[in-house]
Image (cartoon, rainbow, N blue to C red; front, side, top):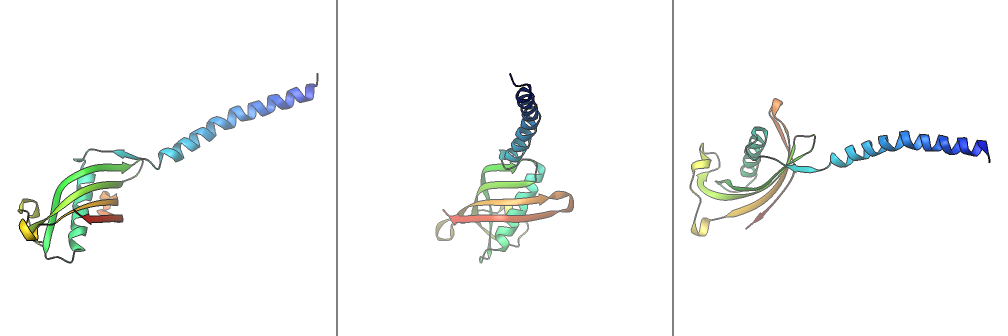
Length: 141
């Protein structure tokens, strides 16, 4: 037997026993950090973010008419952040985009009817009333 070899193997095994759990924790945190999780569509921070999304959408439309939410298909939040990913549908209303009560405005029907489906990623800092659209994609349906 080689006592030096046994000591070296024992030291290596002890090193792996101490390094491996730390490595797994770091990898686990890194992996979890990028996952989106389902959230309640009535969450106050999410609702405020969606109001900003609607405002942003209407502001950037070359259209005098306002759009309003028809349906939030999916609402997600990135773990450990205030970044939201939302899949939603909106419809064109009879109201102008600067009117007060767009939520209660009827949708256009017939030739003026338009609906869009959008995916937005928005970062929210509600404590300072700051909303940043990180990405958006909309298609007419």
